[in-house]
Image 1 (cartoon, rainbow, N blue to C red):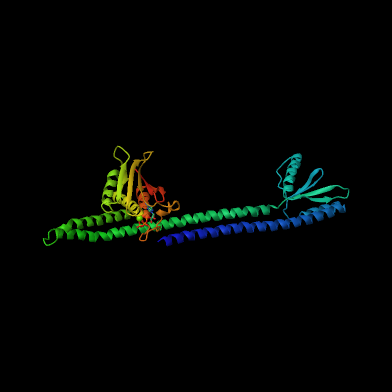
Image 2 (tube, helix red, strand yellow):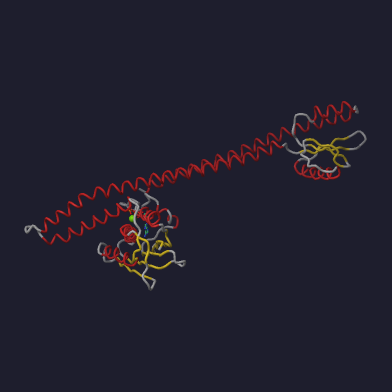
Length: 389
Ligand SMILES: Nc1ncnc2c1ncn2[C@@H]1O[C@H](COP(=O)(O)OP(=O)(O)OP(=O)(O)O)[C@@H](O)[C@H]1O
Ligand SMILES: [Mg+2]
């Protein structure tokens, strides 16, 4: 039983791991791509610088302008600012806001500072010992690729989260149908033999040759079968919730359980309120909750110990609180939530269904909550149940 559950858990982590590695790979790959592109752009700008130097020294204005616009700056989107000792005097591929000429120079000076942080400007020596500088930065394409990488990762994560929820809610709906269908069918099938057994008992009561001392025992067993049937049929249909006296309901089921477990197990019910406490309950299902939790407690204590049940109002008065405390072996911190998963068991003959059923009955049928309030290894465990009033 443990294996099925743990394998599923392992598979989940393997898939998460693979997705994570793919994400990392995508980031690294994009970075390499960006580096290569930046490298290419730097080579281009070097080439431009050389061409620029060449034409600026050729002292033919017409040729200069032609070569500058048609060859040097053509067909590329690398932002460039040309400057000399007086400041910027020309620029290409810079997105300029609409500004007055002085403000424009201010703006370009700021851009120059930003560009210089990224790449050293290229120096060009002019004949008369003056210098010009070509400032440049990465083209917008590189920024877009970097940005695209994050967009891609975000979209992929959103998609996988979405897929996970769609998948798990579909699976939950499927599980619901199986539970309900199974419960309904079981109740239905048990109905006929039980009524037939009751008829047999009536018959035996009138039979003088039949040992009459057996009759009360048989009646008890049939009552038990009837109880099981009513639980299953409650699960299989929308259960009716009624205002029930909580203490009475708890005392009833504990009285029943006490007779069926070792005398070394002591049950103590502690109601922490003065007036009667009512909660919206379906009694057959509620008894199933208490029975399952107490059976687990008895198992955890190895058949000897103390089970205490505290009943009280929640602070806001909307819920009644049931704390069921045992003196058993405790639940490890890492398993506090797992114990409610179907198939999780640490017992040789366990199905790992008890607490799953309990959680379903509390949450789906009573609109309540259940969780492990506290647990300490070899000291004991407290389960807390909240049920709306
Ligand atoms: N009071 C408790 N103290 C310690 N461990 C507990 C307690 N209650 C539950 N557990 C742990 O949670 C597991 C799951 O409990 P659950 O009732 O769902 O299944 P089970 O008792 O193993 O099998 P079954 O389907 O027969 O109830 C148990 O196997 C046990 O390890
Ligand atoms: Mg159990």
